[in-house]
Image (cartoon, rainbow, N blue to C red):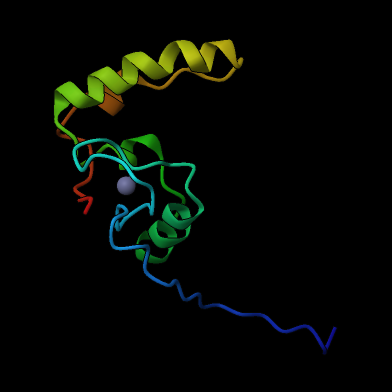
Length: 102
Ligand SMILES: [Zn+2]
């Protein structure tokens, strides 16, 4: 195993200027980042040392926007047989992290 090389650093090129600078997706600034964006996952991991969650993706959103996305996502997650999002933790503005978009 002496020939195995391990890299502990990553470099990201910036997204296109007309895309969200956090997730590299074209979305309104007051909408959540796309937590499935590979760019967002890598950038967030570089900045915070962990994988982002929905809580992180909509931390910069107003409570009303978070609620509308939460209400939109819950039935879709159920249709896919996935765990529901924890409402108390996700919608409480005191527990979300700060984070901007563009
Ligand atoms: Zn974004």
